[in-house]
Amino acid sequence: MNMHLFSEYDEQETAFEQELQTMQFPTTYAAAVAVIARLVQAASDDGSKQRNGTAAADDAFTDALAAALHNVNNEADFHVIWNAFDPMKRFSGDEDGQEMCRQIKRREMKHLYGKA
Image (cartoon, rainbow, N blue to C red):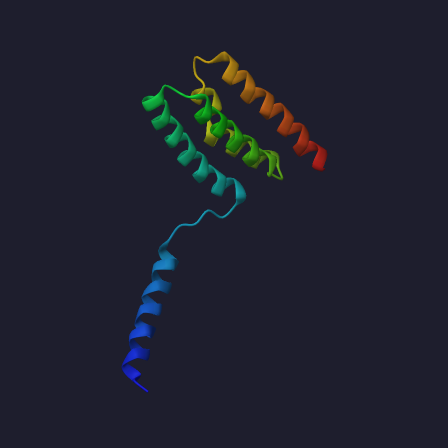
């Protein structure tokens, strides 16, 4: 058996393990969703610039917001996610869009407190 192959594998595995130790991973559900929210917001912003905020982009944003809020287990995480998505900014100047987000917030707050 070729021992060189094993030592090369060991070196690669060690390098990978060291890289993993330096990576920053979200440690809570809210932190993970906050990262996703920033990506959704960036995609929505980009889509708004290109297509002037199509209904499909708005629907995708509100669906992602509702799904993220639906799965929280405490009020602190709820607010972290709400602030990360920043729906009032996303729908700035669109009263109907803002009202839809407020309805999602009320519905999901009721769901959160119904879990207790």
